Image (cartoon, rainbow, N blue to C red; front, side, top):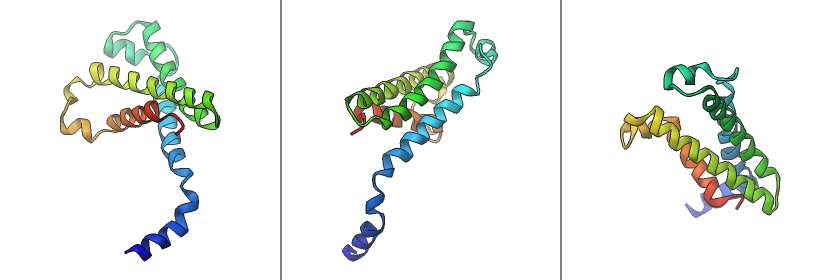
Length: 135
């Protein structure tokens, strides 16, 4: 078993720097797409379905796009500013997802639906970047 582990490490060990980028890009792109799908502004779907004001609906769409962008850009800066930007992006994702759960998906709390949806993973990955930054 140890021999197999060593072989896998020899093959993939040099690529471990890609692991956080796979997660970062996945989260960032997902948030950019979720927000962009609400364009043109103000997003009429949020206004009609949730009764949001045009300003709030616009804020939600722009926040999602910006959060995705910030998560990606934070990783490009290999310094304390990049770490701070990544944590800010993680915080934005967490806040957006908490509001999504509490407004759009109230019936999902602690159910199978919650844990089989993409939303829980967006929340968890955002929480990861909030806690870890660029570490």
